Length: 111
Length: 113
Image (tube, rainbow over all chains, first blue to last red; front, side):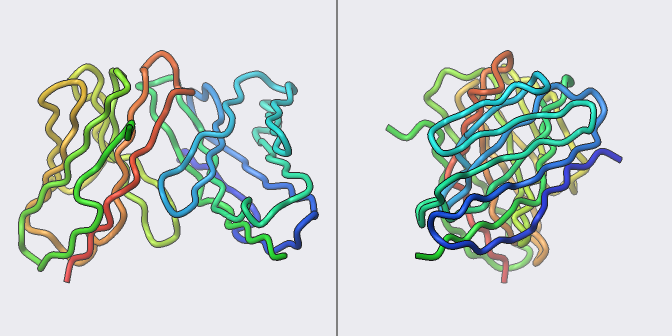
């Protein structure tokens, strides 16, 4: 059965801390892995990772994919209260642009 | 300008009723999706249309019926609503060949009482 598992399920940190969110996947016809940030409204796109070992970076956020071990991590450095959200990862399949989402990691950053 | 818009944002209705949720995108994307998000924030795909053609039809009750009158619209009709249908429903769109364009609507919170 295809699945995407994220850990931890929830995390509370202080401003300035660095966090690492994990996403492991077991899907057939894997194409890419995507990360989203969901606040009160809709999930917003962060990264799409297709190649193994190549880090993608956007400001304080970075992510990398390991296609051999079937996981990805999302790092957030110098966290701010505005980083508080649910972070979702999703495995994109080759078939029909279908996504399998993980259950998300709820991140709370306290001042 | 709202890229993917869903209406209504909130919907409270009684069991047994029939309701529709509308979705429109102005991004020129050729693929649209409906997702159901449960209380644990898990997003599960329900349907996907590419150029008005149904390409993903996951195992959902046949009380749920999608309709895509054109590429920019994908509506979700639900018959005989049940308590377990209460959830947030997200519409999304993308360009089929460019998954990085995937864009979500703001969701419709459906509460069945």
